[in-house]
Length: 264
Image 1 (cartoon, rainbow, N blue to C red):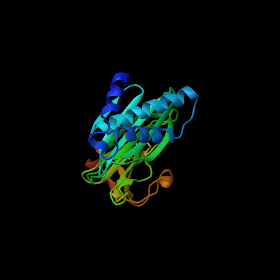
Image 2: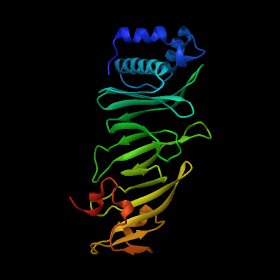
Image 3: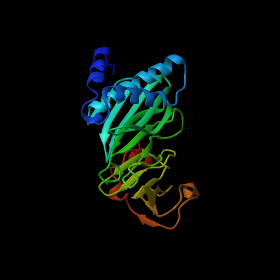
């Protein structure tokens, strides 16, 4: 996404209106420049300059739009509201390095909620209500550049309305989210046909483990629902649980089911 100079200039001229509230055009410009100048930077001077330009453009757009979603090869911008207005920005400064940050936009200030750098393994970011509380959460999708197994690692920053901000990241391997029921089902990182299914439930901003489902070796067509078992103990073999003749229906639509079943 590239914004020509005249487009950015128009935003500068109008930015004192609308959602900028108490900030004048001059004050808004100063506040954005001040915020961007305070971001953590890395890389060559030319890379840092590109990061500053990209984040300045993104914040300008955010002050003009109440809701906005834009993406190009190098720049992703998501403007959204929970209790407050936020803008998420991701910029690829180099082929193997991406700068991401989340800002809260208020009438008289811009707050940095988080910022960090990711390598090329960060392939997607999206905004969604994952736990069914009607507030939008921020999710980074990471795929390790090397490894043995199915590896869609989704790093979730859950919005907490009590603190009016976002919690620290928590990661889920190969998840399928069920916001309506507050459930997360997914497949643990592990070998084809051996990795178990997990079932978690949101408890506020934390999770409770409800069950793991294992495909038992040499017992085709049978599964062991192993409740409240730690992942690190799964390779030790079956524990107390419930034998079932087929996979429970609630797991039938999770992403990557073939990996769990050991089929192609």
